[in-house]
Image 1 (cartoon, rainbow, N blue to C red):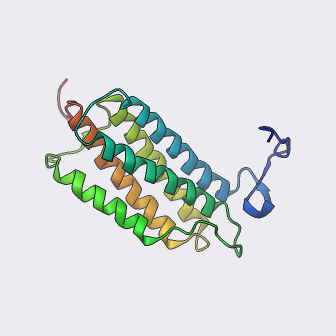
Image 2: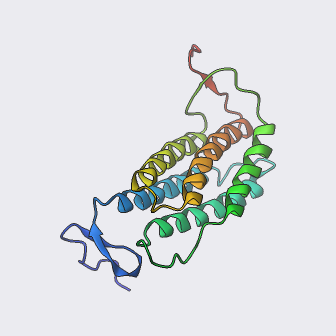
Length: 184
C-alpha cells in the first residue's frame, strides 16, 4: 500500500465509503482533531515509558483502550450521513471513562483553586490532549444533529478524564501542581 495517493492534492479528501469532501469540511476538522488528540496522548504515554509507579500497567491499559476508542470516534465522524457506522460508540465506553475518573480522582487532593497546566512532561502532554479534545468536541457540536449523541458525550467526558489523568500522573511522579496565583 502506498503512503501517498495524490487524490488529496487539490484540497479534497475521502470520507469512509469514498465520499469526497473539502479538507476544510467540519467533518474533517472534527475527526482530524480527534487524531491530533490521539497523537498527543501517545506522546504523553511515551514520557512514562521509563517511569515507575504502582498503577502503571492499569494506566497504560486504560489509555490503550481510550486511544482505540478515540480512533473509532474519528471513524464515526468520517462516516457520511446515511451510511452504516462500522464502529458505533457504545455507552459502555463512556461508563469506563467515568469509572476511571472516579477512581483516579479519589486518589487526588481536592482542588481549592484553578491549577496551571504543566508538571511532569506526561502531565503537561495530557493537559494539551485535554484542550485538543475540547476543540474536537466544539467541532463535533458545530456539525450538528448528524453527530451521534454518544460521540458528544464521549468527547466531553474524555476531556474531564484527561484533566484527572494529568493530575493523577503528576501526583504519582512527584510533581506538585501550581495554583493560578502561587508564586514560583
